[in-house]
Length: 154
Image (tube, rainbow, N blue to C red; front, top):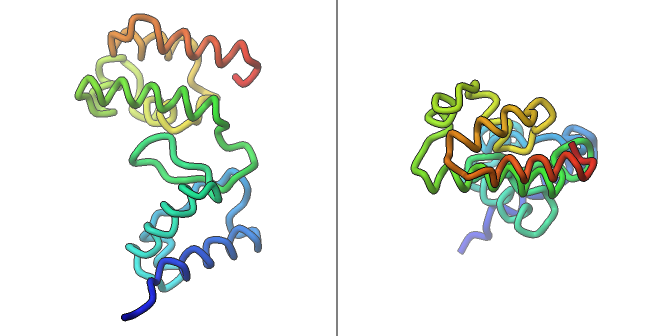
């Protein structure tokens, strides 16, 4: 029986972090891009990244389709990830895509994607109020955003 390949992919990611190829706060490349860089299958790269995020070696993504980040730097913190996850959770519970939410809220798809992935710097209170209304969240998301801003994170 052959040993699993994903540990080699995890070692390659750790090496990229140590040598500065991946800097604190950086999003990890896609599994396909990691595969191209390392010569290891995309499947093994994806598995390695998921296991590393589960073990706390990487900052987990804010959404199911997001990519983990290298710890540190200016990436989203826990408060940003919780706020982003709340938005994504409400959107999914309503059966909407990010494109649907962008259309309903009158915001760009980029703004919605950034709000769901913890990149909140350019997503102000007005945008969160529009997202909240578009999802029928009863002010919950707008209040969470206001609390996040009041905490000094925003």
